[in-house]
Amino acid sequence: MDISGTNIKHITMFDRQYTPEKQAEGLAISQAIVYGHCDKCGFLSQCSTKGEAFRFPVFAWCMRRKAEILADMRKETT
Image 1 (cartoon, one colour):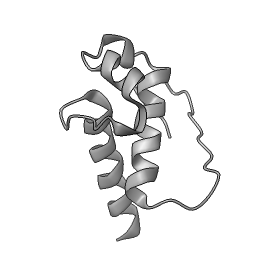
Image 2: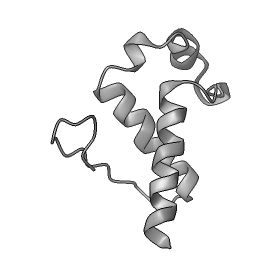
Image 3: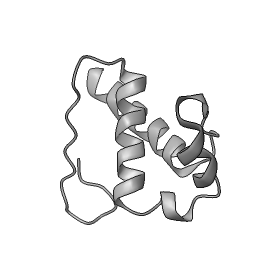
């Protein structure tokens, strides 16, 4: 997956089968970390301390990216 116009390939491997929603979320969060979006996010302190209990706001960078990834996945399956 080429992201951010960098021509860098970011490859993520999952340890088991996940739903498309969980795959997209994992990819989006991974990309947010790698490309520094988490460092600029106003929710970082909550995200990094609340663990599984934290629910990402839909307008956070990673959740907007998740929506884009899901849309791309749906295009590929049709």
